[in-house]
Image (cartoon, rainbow, N blue to C red):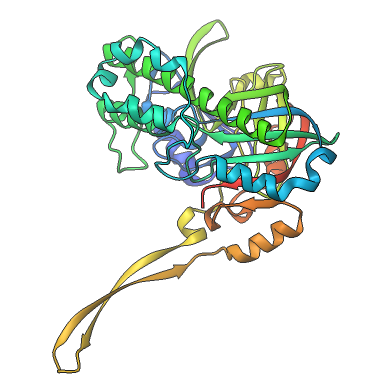
Length: 397
């Protein structure tokens, strides 16, 4: 029998989307950071036989988290945090459509899939754009942070994905599968993994995965060099991806959208809001772990939309009269305030000792759940290895 398993609480919109996914999925699992997404809920895990929904993987294919432990202690950098934050923010490239200020060479651009994929062959400019964007971070909830752990070790953590390359791949194959990109609650359509289109999607998804890994690797390496240290350990995962996995003797495509793989002894880095502690965790074996197909959260999970938090601009038209008595149309754009006063947020974060560069109201801590509560809902499936306190947070403005 098909089933939905929920960890923690779930909003009705996310449950409805999970029900829609059950049209073709064998099971849907909602992690405790779940919320409504496009087609499949964020924090959702879909279990499929021989099919993949491109909308399940999502627009930001292979978005993921990477954290690296350095050989530096807090005392090695605590007197330099302000200038370090400035250098990190000025060196890296943030923002929608942003290109890396540094050209990054990588063997992925020699991969035969660029010439073999029907989609990539039909979109030659994608490779040029991808080369220019490799190592750029993007906008939204994507970040580059510097942390200290419970033992005073310095870490760097990043969160972003495959940029324009992944979005273009996703858009093409979602339309090919039959998805309407303008309808959030549409049942995600799937591709047969053995079809030509399915094989092409898998090849492109894997390329986007390599691309995302390469970008996160470069950013972490660059930030650690700025800090003046060396990397001595790393934790790296995708959380928007489809994996072919064996569970109970059966092969399934496990589609994790905003969910982290957490097999026994597998580590993951999970980021919180800009003022809260993040964690490095490890999956453990248990009946509960098996029930959710060895998956866990990818973050704290939103509780407020970007528009609710930030407000919106509204076009207002009025009729006015000129000095000569003639009338004319006067158009202005009025900002309607959101629920978050970001100036207050910045003051509070500064008092906590977190140095913030960039960011905006739609990424304020108020729009997220408490990570500690989210993790508590997964007790028995994960073990917390390290708690990471933020020192520097860099995001798009």
